Image (cartoon, rainbow, N blue to C red; front, side, top):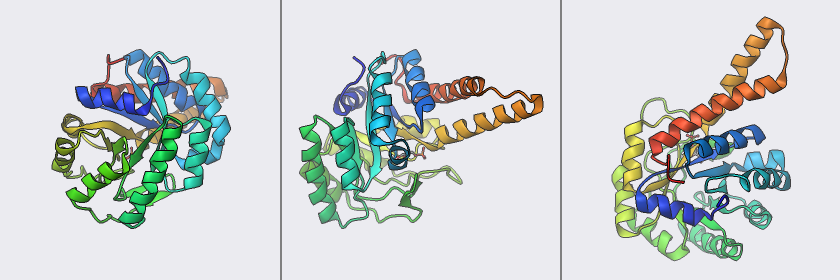
Length: 285
Ligand code: 13P
């Protein structure tokens, strides 16, 4: 069962109204920790890679690493390319074996975004892969992609039209969410999610997951946010657990990298498990 198409993973979550967590991994340790936490929880999970991570590790090495680990996974999982405005990178990842991509053409005029997204959907379909689309930038910079400015919200009709015309498998509207750390809990336009899913039953991607409350997650998942993205929380847990370990290592003057990896992996797993419970995906696989 391990590698399951993006569309199938999201369909089950959307139909049964639970959220599949999509974690932005940054290396082999975080990839392994996310998969392992999902297995322990019997939860489907999406592994997400930013363009920056793909460039850092390399399309071929990253995919080989993913394939080796995911083919042994006991829960449904797939690999997704997060916010990618670069068509060449989209093509390279699809050709290598990525299961889905977020073509981020939100900075383009809507008409051009729609035209190019149609092309990306056709390209992805040749590989049996899926596509997430967006027409408004999600505020905040995610691994070098995006902007801190609030983008223009498009009308409901523009969103519905985009979904219908392009045939994307998942749609990411801007609802007041943002990447990174929120200075205060944001007020979200949750009705926007219901307005879309009540008209077209398409799984919605909730970006900017780090810092939202349990109630916000659960309300949005009930409205159709079947894919819930978490990146910043993983980075914080990863960095802070490394720091805690290194401080201790310095105090004791004991330097053992493998023990450090074990310590950090455990911290990342605990963080992942908490989100899986909140999103209601535990026991779904
Ligand atoms: P956070 O960094 O706020 O968790 O958002 C993740 C995300 O939406 C990735 O696209």
